[in-house]
View 1 (tube, one colour):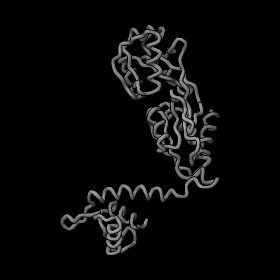
View 2 (tube, rainbow, N blue to C red; view 1 turned 90 degrees about the horizontal axis):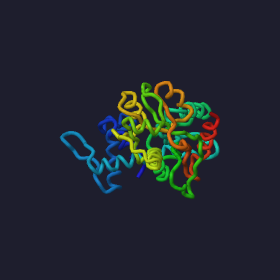
View 3 (cartoon, rainbow, N blue to C red; view 1 turned 60 degrees about the vertical axis):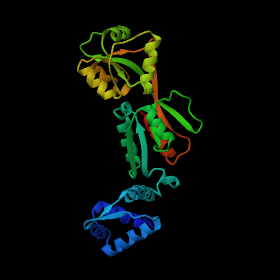
View 4 (cartoon, rainbow, N blue to C red; view 1 turned 30 degrees about the horizontal axis):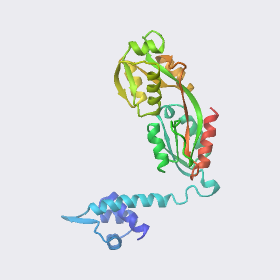
Length: 289
């Protein structure tokens, strides 16, 4: 089974026909047909069904196509990350929670890209708990998240990059009061309790015996801020220094907790992976801010 045959299969699907794939690859239609017939013989399954005058990818063909695309991606990345210089080429698969993505991540990645122009960076968003699982499953190289609330497994490591206090965030028109008074008086927009930050907020509310009037639950900080702007209620979130002044100009912020509670934000990764040296550079760039 050749890589060439897998590329031909993908080209047929992308171009829409055997003839168009041949034109794209510089092959005759007969040569394309021979490659696909040989591939079918090796796999022991037909990949295309004839529908009228057209060859249409069937169920087995779609499964093989999906696997072929994965194999070709890995084939193209075969040399990525090899050798000392290779650490800083190829693709960095990074996860980041919303507050990091909208904060200092942009300037950090811009400096990183200036230093390593061949580097490709893919950033995926999600909740801390989900992103941590994607590191542990090997889908992501590293993630910028809230510090895990469980002990760090031996094969993984954590580096704290920032400590963010929590605030009650209310509309500008609401007069400043204590956090407890505000939470008892105004409707509460809760963050998803599955999120580690949401779990920390719920624990502090229970500890202090505060039972706010919950009017909705959201899994997005941005959505929660939009609801606060519409005077639908108030919310609680962690705010780093990079966003503090921006939010103070637009909202009423009151420290939350007695004493004020904080969360650590940092980088979570496997102790040994192909992008470890690059992840260390990422940490260093964050700590310069």
